[in-house]
Amino acid sequence: MRIARPELEREIIRILTAHGASPAQAAAAARHMGWCESVGRHNFGIERIPIHVKRLAAGVLNGKAEPALEQVAPAIARLDGGGGFGYAAAERAMAEAIRMAGAAGIGAVGVANSNFFGAGAFYVNMAADAGMIGIAMSNSFPKVVAHGGLKPVLGTNPFAFGAPRANGEHLLFDMATSALAGSTVREHIEKGEPLPEGLAIDDHGQPITDPRKVGDGALLPFGGPKGFGLSLLVEILAGVITGAAVGDGVASMYNDFSRNGGNGHFLLALDIARFMPLESYHARFEGLVAALKASGGHVLLPGEVRWENRRDAEANGCEIDAAKWAALEALSASR
Image (cartoon, rainbow, N blue to C red; front, top):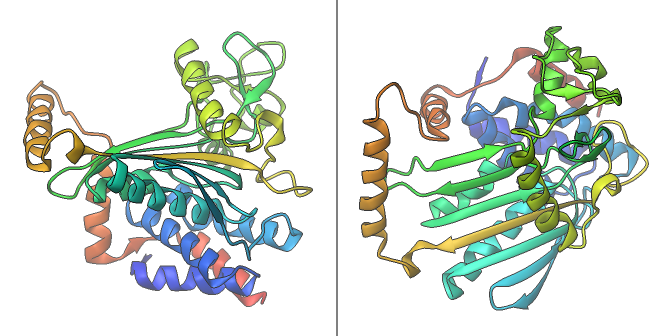
């Protein structure tokens, strides 16, 4: 089914406010989910609403949170998410990083006391829209082993970066530092499909292909020691230096209803105009793009497919899974 993005976002706000979120927190969640649905990142869209509602009802997600910013240096700030939606905290943090970068050339904001922040691409796209390079990271509940280890000690710890393009269809790179994203595991469970070997292991180091058993074992870092190193960078920047929870201090979004998530995020914006005029940057970057495209085969830039989906959504409405929409209507009726 197809739904225009403004209508979709209004419905998300209506449901979340009915279940205890403030208009500001609900609107941030709606902007994020609406954008994700419009670009085809459906695993970060409306399918997350039922778990948010459940966490609101359990009192472990503060729907009335008011994030508090503390400026600690001309280009560095800390933000306390107040235990609210990670979407609201991270969006505010990137907006502040962009503001500081406009004044100082670079801006970095560390976020603590937050929750799941969704797709990092959303935040780096904010920076790219402002003519800046953006970086976004978040730590998460441990489900990934250290390289060579057996027990989960790190989260899927997403890492994203973005770079602006003159046509507005920015380069957007967004990945989990694990061999498989948690949402992909859930998708395999829903479809009854096995996992390929080499992505998850049990506590004896034996491969797991049944996605239902990943919770009793762990995912591997992508690329072995390379992914492990990048995941450590995320944990240090998003968790350690922000004062957020680290490792098993972060609560599982789906399985732990005894406490707030405690996630940390790290958002950075870099003003390209401090290096060269944007016109020069765009000319140089598009030269790189042309070389990539001319290298043979079918080269796609990170995020390129997202913009194809966005154009389709703007013309025809966001493509929404009918079953997930029905689940939302049931949530709405329950209030």
